[in-house]
Length: 326
Image (cartoon, rainbow, N blue to C red; front, side, top):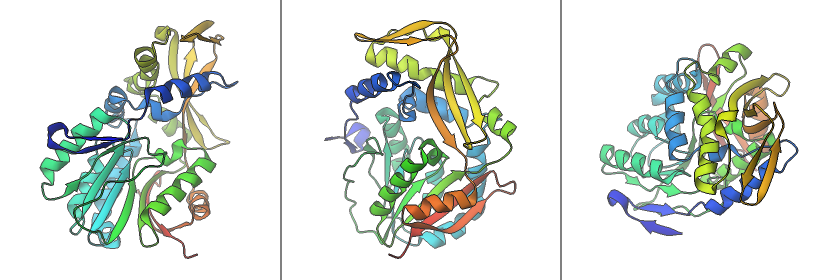
């Protein structure tokens, strides 16, 4: 771990290792169903492309969640209370957090956590300018791992974990329970988790959201192969893969895939991985939940939905989870 000061902003850096990417990429390609964790989609370029995805007409989750947040900010801020420490996993551009911080009563600090250091630095510097009296304490880390958080200059009344977007859907259901347990431990018995949860809706609407006409999601997905070629010196004919996302109705989830257009071999060091024509590399799940289904997951993690806000079409929800009494 190291702490540096780019642009006068302290960054606690747990140095997510390139060797970990190599190890996970090779392990994923070795499976019968080739698969890579979606966290590796988010290098600096991937984070930029994801922000562009959020601006596409077909991609409704971001603007829907922003609408929910804007409509209910006063109530949300009142429920969270004064002098919060806000911790955000996978913070990205921190766009939604800006709205939240503006409405909170005397927040103590904001701890953005992201795996893409360059992107984290830029967002942290912008927020420091916008909130000059607030402790901004960025952490570069894989937020699914265990690590210590930096200490603010003053004590907080409550820790709030902010996890907007539909990222909870990227986990398997058992992983989602484990992640929420981690959030519960972090926020403590008096804390809270404010989380975005994608809801099950019209399959055609979901399909279009992950296969936009402009091809931004395709570029985002294919960037994983660009990253492997750049960082791992992988030998990949990227032009022979294409992006395709499908909606699995039975499992209630989007699956993002990179499909091989021909029989070919991908090489990482001395490791060789054969692809047949039509075979795919699975890069992301995005589960969509019913209200009751997500409530069961939260309860398994020791949390309960204290309040659920949705849009009029019930395509997305913002949920306030609080620890259940033991």
